[in-house]
Length: 189
Ligand SMILES: Cc1cc2nc3c(=O)[nH]c(=O)nc-3n(C[C@H](O)[C@H](O)[C@H](O)COP(=O)(O)O)c2cc1C
Image 1 (tube, rainbow, N blue to C red):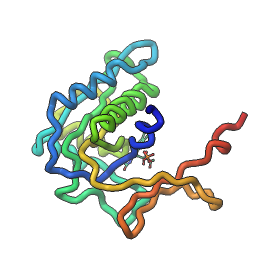
Image 2: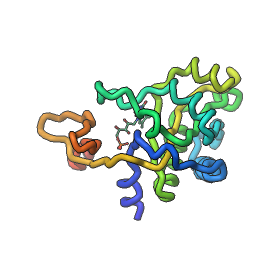
Image 3: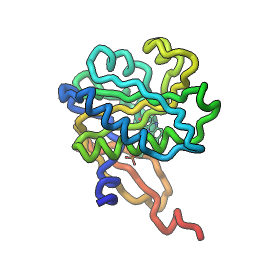
């Protein structure tokens, strides 16, 4: 079960933009993050939720998509995420946040996958622009943005070949291919 869920939970970057995600759904996903591990149990993460087109449109311009796909500028109108969760670090709770946000993000994406949704963690963010667009007080640091929606693309996991190239790529049939290193390469002892 967990293997199926993790295998299905890929990074999706194209969506059925007209399939809305309810605010309550986003709150349920953040609740999964809330229950996840936190260093020192400090729980420094805060969240901004966006599921209406106006707020989503304020977030989208500040994100960079799929750096290896040089000819693709990101999802076009109609295939953009229908919702976002912005993960913030509250500096008044902790000055430095190590990996809490990664764990929270994965909990959220696994929950989304279980619901038939999908998404992508985005760390290539024009942080200052997004901070201003959403009027986020300086006490909060933007750590990650999760783009969410009903996936509109196929993603295939493959094994890294003899060239060692780990770059994801898109084939002419629009399938997004993701090479993963083999198990015997990643276990070193
Ligand atoms: C911390 C983190 C930051 C990421 N930032 C971006 C990003 O800024 N833009 C993007 O398109 N994908 C981003 N990704 C998605 C990765 O490109 C993706 O996880 C990788 O290609 C493997 O694909 P998979 O998630 O389907 O296994 C990020 C992933 C992680 C874990």
